[in-house]
Image (cartoon, rainbow, N blue to C red):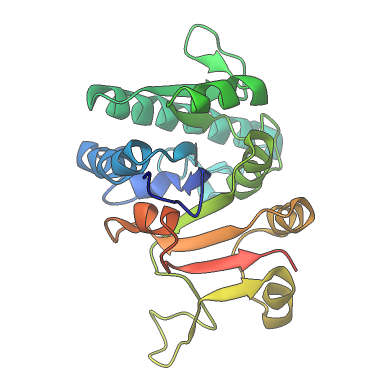
Length: 239
């Protein structure tokens, strides 16, 4: 009998900085680690979409962009996410997995354009689908892009990779008495003043009924464990 999974289809949100040792550029060994963590999830029959940021290349709200018009800086950041998406695609393909990068910004000579229908088809075919280009619009974070894409592809959860193992009442790196939450609602986030993601993403998640799982990507096997229904990180559920 096939093993039961808590999630059938997941949307993994990776920051650009997560792809580099020092937060800049792309580190091949880290790409390999992402592949090694995702591969057993795919092998177990869970469909995986990925939205990736671009902080390792260019961030629209960074000091480097301070003299630029916001829409230009954000466009540069969105292009950076496509570079990361292509790097991830190649890492998966080189490891023998089926993977396809789709861009919200049309660039047919580089990769296919995003559509929810195409993404769903590829997921059903067993591809890891990497979604670059943000939403294709400035003034929108990749957190919001992740929730939007999660809703569009029919994901059961958005899994947000971080450097800590969930959501705490205060910064665990600064406070030894920080308390970790296993489960929260969106109303809890507001009441407790917790910053899990930006307000637009949180509202979209609440309205769309899409849970957010915040977990530590550096703990190997976390993605598969969560897909199998084990307690991993903090889950934020609609109120």
